[in-house]
Amino acid sequence: MFFKQKSAPLTGSCKYIIAGLGNPDRKYENTRHNAGFIAVDKIAEKCGTTIDRLKYKSYCATVTMGGERVLLMKPQTYMNNSGQALVEAMNFYKIPPENAIIIFDDISLDVGKMRIRRKGSDGGQKGMRSIIYLSGKDTFPRIKIGTGAKPEGWELADWVLSRFSDDERKLIDEASLNAFDAAELIISGQIDKAMNKFN
Image (cartoon, rainbow, N blue to C red; front, side):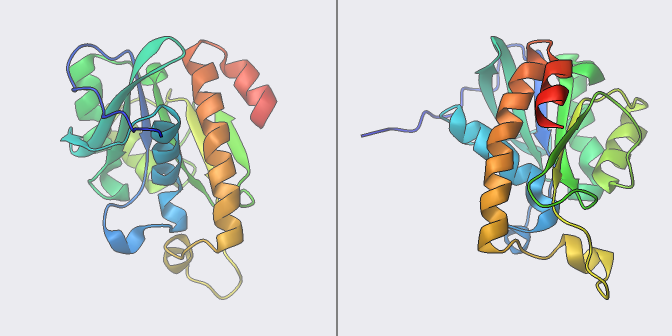
């Protein structure tokens, strides 16, 4: 029989953050825009914990990955204000942008495809836009998870807030496990290897 480990208290120093972006209300569960939440929950599960402590305007947990202490975050500010939560945690732990890995949805990628970037613009993703604007930096490593292109006739807002089918959700769960491996490589200083493996 397996018992889930409770998240460690949010004390002590963290050297890295992994933030999955999404929207907090139950009505947004399993939607395309919440791919970041889904991925970071899977990462927590793989680490034997749950993201259940409320701090930094987020649900948080601390885990060890790549030999480093890592803060997992699910900002509860709604997607467009993700930077409020992330920058608060970065300031508290004095974490530079290069050590804050952001996971979010990307409609330019097929469902379940993954793309890792070392830095760059927000690419139209409003959560990243908030993070870059409030931090003044664009040097965040990011893991984008494909959620599929908007079908003809759909409004963009309706598409990103639509739910995954069962088959799509399986692909997102697989991508989330790959995101764990990619994040671990990034934390251990091997972002190029992560990009070569998963892009």
